Amino acid sequence: MYNTNIMCGIIGYCGRETAAPVVFEGLRRVEYRGYDSAGIATFNNGTLLLCKDVGKLGEIESRHHLSKMLGNTAIGHTRWATHGGVTQANAHPHCDCTSTIAVVHNGIIDNYQELRKQLSTNGHRFTSETDTEVIPHLIEEEMKNKRSLEEAVLAIAPKLKGSYAFLAMSSRDTDKIVGTRKDSPLAIGLGNGAFFAASDVLACSGIANKLIPLADTEIAVLARDSAEFYDAAGRKLTKKPTNLKTQWLDTDKQSYDYFMLKEIMEQPEALEAAVRQDKKAFTEIAMDILRAGQVIVTACGTSRYAALVGRYLFSKVGRKFCDVVMASEFHYFADSVDRNTVVLAVSQSGETADVIEGVKRARDNKAMIVSIVNRPQSQLANMSDHVIYLNCGPEQCVAATKSFLSQLAVFYLLSFSMVNSFDKAVKDIKGMKSKVAKTIEWNNERLKRLSERLKYKHDFYYIARGINFAIASEGALKLKEVSYIHAEGMPAGELKHGTLALIEQGTPVAVICPNDYTYDETMSNAMEAKSRGAYIIALSDRKNQIFDFWVKIPKVSELLYPMITVIPLQLLAYHTAVSLGKDPDKPRNLAKSVTVK
Ligand code: M6R
Image 1 (cartoon, rainbow, N blue to C red):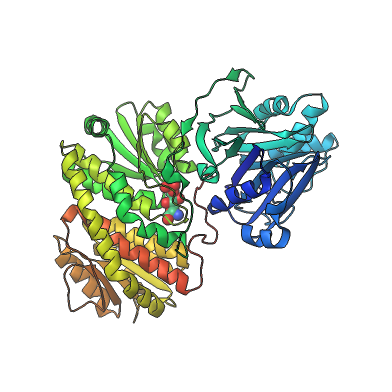
Image 2: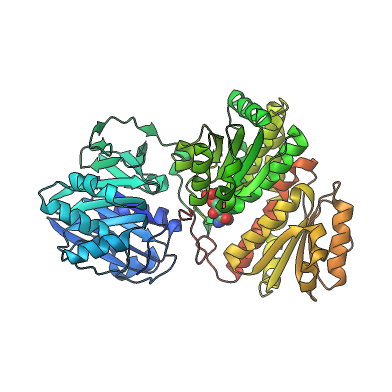
């Protein structure tokens, strides 16, 4: 038996319109959370209709016409499996023995084997290998005792160990959806005469204009004309909706072939949005960081590379040293976190399980938590003392691009706020808008041609020094995740300590060498690689005869180069993926929000 529904997208709709098209659209918007299989359940004239299959949403739609299902209440699911079969039986929704209760779930039920055993002993028949399937059967047991769907959900939730957000429907009340969550996201959206529940606000964008966050263990009961909320003890709660920002309504590719390119192109505007911050709040956070006994930044993947640039800025500008700890390793260091610690958690989604886990431990040890997030209403934001938003709007490509640039801008603002220079930092970043646009304009077509030439290479190396070192790592990560070509990024000085052994005739080495204090030393390292046959792709504002391919970048001040040097590397990764026929928005084996540890 396997856990097969680890990071997924769920959505439910109750309203006057036919539900399936709305749910299908919602699933399309959150498909980046998982794309192994998908399904929808609706009630039509009291009968449960269920359609699910393996494959991407578009493929399932063309085979089964999911979006044409009838009924005004529906739940849907798009799945990302870590292990176990990607099969139709394991796809969601899952039902009880009588096929009158349907459930979609995101998370892991840790004690599902035990529950399944008990339920099987009581005569329940299981049709999938998933942990999720215990939920409809548990609800079935409770509803046999004349409990309503919400009473049943309240009764079974304490029996579930692990993390979950799930939505349930029953033929007993076909206009109702009941949802609850623990350690997995679930937001409630309100639209015109309609209610939504979704694991991601993006699922509701364009259809909901207000949001209600649901706290851990709370229960939402959505009906055609009402939404009610209860705590775990069944006490009714009053909740205040908040407006959904208009930038979160834009979920179209517009004229672009892929979201990745659209999001790369949006970066000049993202910089402008990132500096729309409250100066006073920023300065206070910066002062808390300066006063702290220790500062630890925790993040994963691309967000961690932004943190590494931030570490450099904190030291250079604020003279404040901080450590950057990979979120999946952070809790192993929790013993040295105390009330004099500021933990800065960086996460585009605000839902990354490794980050959440570390932050929980840090909070238990009384550390101050400051988070830098993009997605509204995230778990991370909810558990932080201070939240800084990136404001760059929805990022739908699995590969992070514009959120990274926004994170760099926020770190720049924070570090200058440490020396009371918030306004200067805002001005600097605004000035970068045109430089980023220029970098794209100068290099987009040339990098497309370069990617055609290099796309069959097996290995790429990326080197840089100082503040750009993390950009080398970020460039390598981008190429790996969207084109599936092996790539490594490292400080240029490290190359000769081992990796140089891998350089052969024609091996591409991207050298990030702006004309600053690192130029000469980086050039020596590039020369060492070139002498062994490397093909040097150099990102610089100063030409050198050792370059085989020069990616010209504008001159900017030393601490701002990362905001420029990352751009050509994103473009190189994008064009390489596309010229290899890969879908850069949905790379194999990955998902946008990694909600498992
Ligand atoms: O949402 P987060 O920023 O917490 O996500 C962290 C990583 O999973 C993420 O940056 C991942 O590495 C991206 N796919 C990189 O493009």
